[in-house]
Image (tube, rainbow, N blue to C red; front, side, top):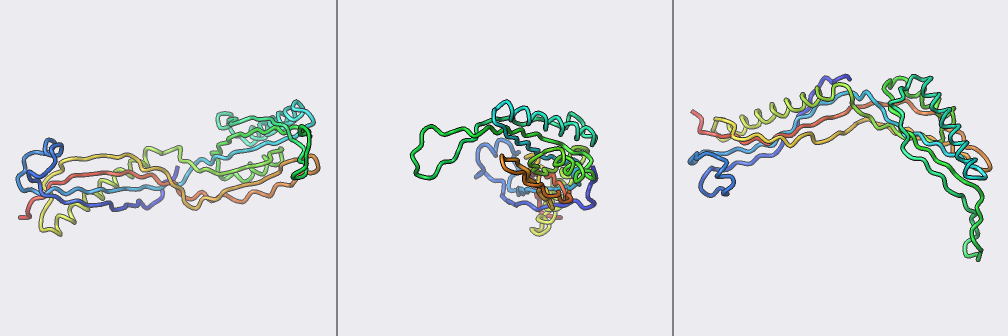
Length: 259
């Protein structure tokens, strides 16, 4: 995991109120009797960015056969070949997971409007979807190319993730949210000719989620049918971009007149 040099901060919103008897009963019970003191409510969000260290791909294997067993057996043979390829490319077994397996008949398509009896089965199609997590991103293009060579029909992705240093990045975002909240409170207080006396309440809404920038999608197709096979395009290079972690704070500050 590599942290990006800059830490980004985003300002939130502001609310100012005078603590007086007009406060709601719930708020009045949680705040001390402060007379005509001023309450400043600040929402601040801090962000930290890092370079992702994991790329997740979905690998599809599609085969056909005159019978369901034939389609399944061919699919299983290709799946084994792909597993051997991933092992040769040093992808750990824990990073390979079957997502779905299906087999279904392929029906003859009659002319529109034609009256036909029960549809005739031409053959069977077996599908196998496997999730692959790549930790050595520099090798990703070579691994994707090897997957197609091994018989994969489709490869979709990547979904970039951050595995190592997750807590470190979140801590940076939280500290940045604290700095942002304090800076905003002091700036607003100064603008009103006041100063920050104390902090009355802190609420952490937790991480806001994950976003990635400069992310590309790698897609390829080599689905076999009864007639021919469509060659797979070469995979493009990966642009890792950045993973963003965010933390949000709601802070109530007590303002008093400046000396």
